Amino acid sequence: MRPKIFLFGDSITQDSFAEGGWGASLANHFSRTVDVVLRGYSGYNTRWVLKVLEKVFAATQHGDGGINGAPVAITIFFGANDACLPDRYGAFQHVPLLEYKQNLHSIVSFFVKQWPTTHILLITTPPIDEEARLRYPYAYNPQGLPERTNEAAGEYATACIAVAEECGVPVIDLWTKMQQCPDWRKEYLCDGLHLTQSGNRVVFEEVILKLREKGLSLEAMPVDLPLLADIDPNDPLKSFQ
Amino acid sequence: MRPKIFLFGDSITQDSFAEGGWGASLANHFSRTVDVVLRGYSGYNTRWVLKVLEKVFAATQHGDGGINGAPVAITIFFGANDACLPDRYGAFQHVPLLEYKQNLHSIVSFFVKQWPTTHILLITTPPIDEEARLRYPYAYNPQGLPERTNEAAGEYATACIAVAEECGVPVIDLWTKMQQCPDWRKEYLCDGLHLTQSGNRVVFEEVILKLREKGLSLEAMPVDLPLLADIDPNDPLKSFQ
Image 1 (cartoon, one colour):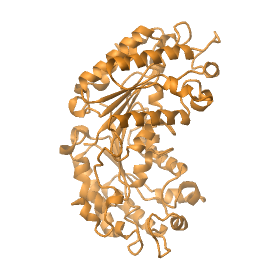
Image 2 (cartoon, chains in turn green, orange):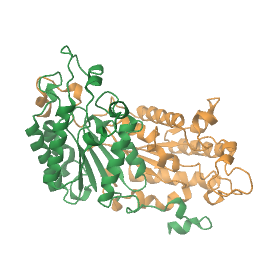
Image 3 (cartoon, chains in turn green, cyan):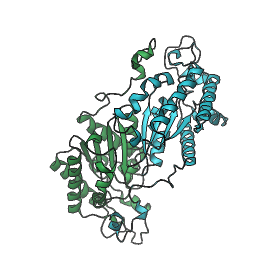
Image 4 (cartoon, helix red, strand yellow):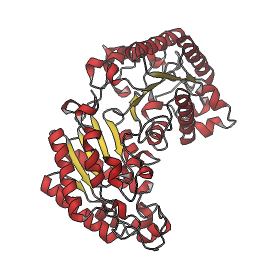
């Protein structure tokens, strides 16, 4: 039975199998060892997620669930929608900071209870380029103000990091990491929120790094069948006895 | 329980989640409806595959197997390695044409028996650019002759099509399809055998087309949770009751 890694998040997860996406890169990296399973829900915030956790992951709902189908790891990547400002056009996605933190706690607790052996990896919202958000609104925006700000995203990132520490699980601080690149707005973001291929690369590399720290690396994980390089050209069938 | 599509094949399947790969494109296309599960084994021919079918897919081996874990579809994409010439450096991968045909029959039969409701989709080997194969050998090649020829690949493609017809399953004739483009060698192949992003696009589009003919399209398949566009901004939680 090949191990699984679930990717659970919003649009930045849902879109992660597009060209150069971090999910596809993970699937490619682990092509012989791990199934990367996509559970991305565009636009979702942690409040909505709490309403659907059971349905998406509970054992009784599908054969993959339950302790027997526990993934080796799950990435939890929510916050970008919660961080929508409450007085802008994205208000219907906004979740107050304190509730976001509580919700994220509840989500982590759900998986800890459901899958005690699974490595949980939190990922913070990326930074926001407000000017680009004005150029790429996803709804009518008569206010002419961005629906997200980088400052607010930073507060949700900080809350996410706090939850990770409180729960004792690793976290990728994408908000800080990306801003270490001077040209982060153009280099990593395609519309001030979603990721370029280069931005996807950052997520991929950070996820690989965190998984490796938990012993989940290509070198440490068995392949289910012999690799071509390990098959004797003079007696190939020997590998399949 | 989200439906699954298995991708079963050699390196052209194993590499299908690389940048612009047809597997990643499928996963992206079906991001909210289907799990695309990669079972690609670089270098494998149908003779080796027959030795491992049970291990990879049998119900007793993993929770995803058996009738309850039946995928809605499986692509079977072998032949490029079988078609290695018996007197060149790739001889250890060669499988005689008649045996290839019999093996492919056995592989299809295995899935028909294991998963009677699953749509099986055969894919022929792509065409071969012999000059490029000389520039990109994967082993010491003192003969200076290509380990594969386009003519031989064509014979295996014809055999694959015959098996599909005999078994009553659809087939993508990639060998013929790709050669309809005058510049197929450069446009679709990166080393005379494996696919460029453009070549991957051909496979993706053909697979989508064949799945659609079997009723497996985005429009026909349910999403497990509401799409953002269907959520009422004035009362988002209504969608989750």
